[in-house]
View (cartoon, one colour):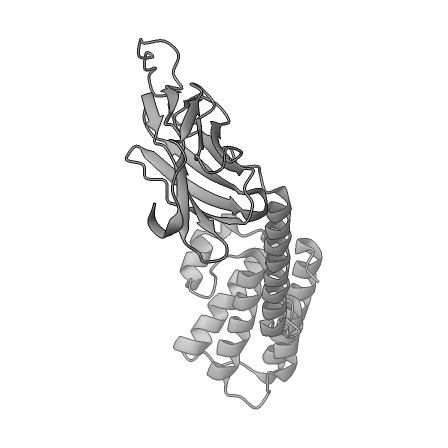
Length: 305
């Protein structure tokens, strides 16, 4: 053999079917052996298989581990070398069903002194069965697709309470603000001291001047009494002529005797205003006094204050 080495005999190969591979022993060292084994010989698609190769009984020699050459659908996932134990381990995955062969694996034996290849050992191929995860040969019946399950979200009571409190607070503030605006814009009404028809008539009589001419005096005096009647019993006596008052005297709530006196006064005033009938100062005084008595009777009769 090259470099003084020769094989005393052929390498004896022992192989086991199933878990174990072969053991090769060179002629010059009957104690050296190689052993390959699988942790299982039947797997399903995608299962991890452990292939372990161990070289035993070597001395003054070093091992050279080669690559394990496999083809699709066999895949080498990981390789781990344990030098102290003269061992190498592969993690293998097969991605199809059927019978597959893991090829033999070769390990070189090198002299430590001169690093020359002394000889090599190789395992026998190993058989493995990969089965489907589905049981039986009949394909499973596809079931109809179910409708999506509706997602039920929990009612966010905490957020609802927070938002309700916030909205309620805003409404209270708006209400308070609107009331303040109304209060600020409110202008208290200043009511004047409204006189009753009786008080106004008495006051006007007191102010009626005696120096007025006859026409002006009786125009004012008749207007005072007409205004008093109109504002007391709501009869438009200011717009009515004396003739119209006479024609409608039945609707005027005045005692007949007093009503006749008032109509007589109005007729005489018309003659003084329009026919320039002459009157005296004493007649003026009597007419003013009579007007005061007329007002007093009306206030008592109509319950005016």
